[in-house]
Image (cartoon, rainbow, N blue to C red; front, side):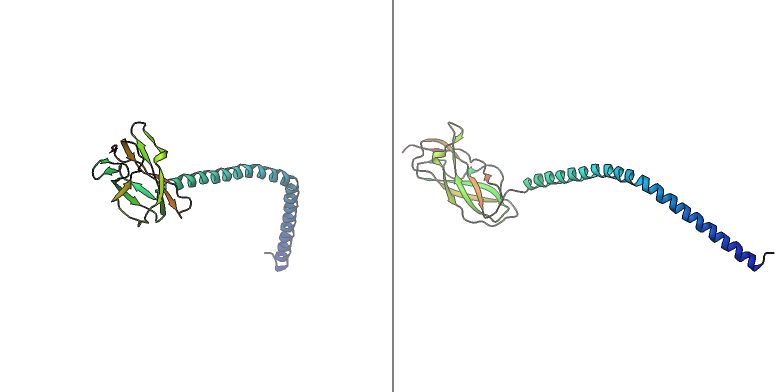
Length: 192
């Protein structure tokens, strides 16, 4: 049976050999890393470059998605159907025509209305008959509702078939685009 001194001597030898092995392994690892590290760093750079490009691509895609979803935001006024003539469809120049729209207001913007008339004979807006006015401020509405407007016919409007097609410009709502209302039914302007 080994004595206590033999056990101590064996334990000291084991620690000495283990330490020598550890130092040798550490030196071998350090030498290997010294030669391999530049190649590892170069390899890591080549691996990171595609990652940086992919991150840039993802950022570009997100910007495109953001721009597209911004355009999907509801207009400040939505129309359901076209404007309907609510009363007599034969008007004299300088008279008024009542036009009813079904609409919903999504934003509380003040509104400038560009009154425009489409001449049936040409199928185009006659800009000589256009004028602009400030609309009465309306409340935001959750549902579609009926709105009737009495539109002043210009005194110099020639006889014929016409439709009302206003362009609505939001005031005080930055970045909100104009809305082109659907044209009304045609009404007749008769000669005086």
